[in-house]
Structures are given as structure tokens and as C-alpha cells.
Image (tube, rainbow, N blue to C red; front, side, top):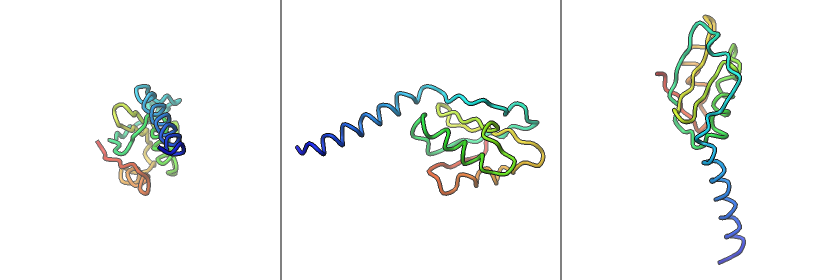
Length: 109
């Protein structure tokens, strides 16, 4: 078998192993979700890795005006996102739309 193919397969399997090894560890962020009068909960589809996916979901939601990264908690193990919002912050529909164009889909709980 070609050594380039074997090398590529080995590299891919190492990346996959590194990614899946981290999936049991929740991603920790300094959260301010509980400081808000309202917490919105969403089911997250499309997360395949506990290392890169939760921060990507968090970043997409945090692009919305009025939402900071610390206002968003994403848990890979439970496939959920919780967003702390104030009265004038984005609506459920706007938060769901914030991940359009990514591999993720949000469904309000």
C-alpha cells in the first residue's frame, strides 16, 4: 500500500482519537448565564466533537447583538445550549437563526 495513503490514514485516526478522547469532558467557560433574568434552552444537532463544536456554537450565537460569549453555555454531552437573555436581547427565533450556514441546528426546548 502506498506510504502516503498510510500516513494520511494514521494522521486522520490520530485526529479522530484526540477529538473523541475529549468528548467526555464538558467545555468550561466563565459563564454569566445565571445572571440574566431569563435562560433559553436549545437542543443542538450536528456536534461531532466535544473539543471544537461547543465553542463554534457559542461563537455563532455570540455574534448576535446583545449576546456575549459568556452568556452562552454549550454542553457536548447533553447536546444542549443555554443562553442567558435580558428583556431586549434576541428572540428564540433569532438565536435559532444564528447558526444557519453552519453544521449545527438549534431547536428550542
